[in-house]
Image (cartoon, rainbow over all chains, first blue to last red; front, side, top):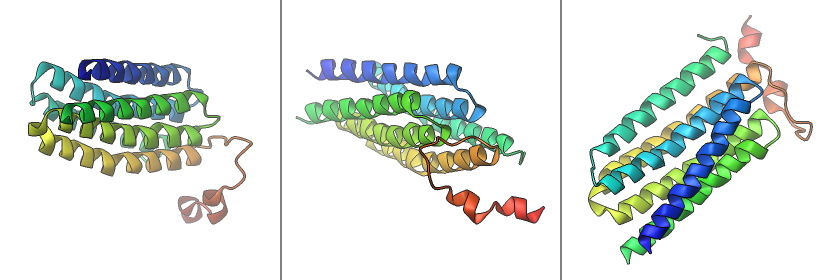
Length: 86
Length: 112
């Protein structure tokens, strides 16, 4: 039962990732691509936590934390660049 | 029992991820996409992390830290991104009727 739920959740998150990836390649403007990138990284947090659970290694959660930090910085930097403030 | 609850939370969170991705594809302009792409996925991530905390109670503190971080940074990045899109001249959908940022005037433009 729980295994089925985890598989279903992984599939739903994977479809969401693919939709965001479509917008990343399609996006008419740069801001669209940055939004798609931000969405993909946030979905990846769930993916990393899922891998940590399946492998049974808590240390992978630290990877998720650093990943969240770096993706946040990346989005801020690109947004400042779009604003011509950097 | 806690396992079932964790699985349900996980599926709910992944469903919100799916809704966010769908909004990213279907919404008409950049600003609507920012709303769909960040709000829905923030809630989805929080629900998913809560689900993992139910499945593996020993990890609750670390998952809570990640959730707190997402809760702080995601609205901030979406706001900065929306402001950047507005200043770089992204067109709004024709369905949008109010542009408060334009009415108030851009502070940086005033300074020049």
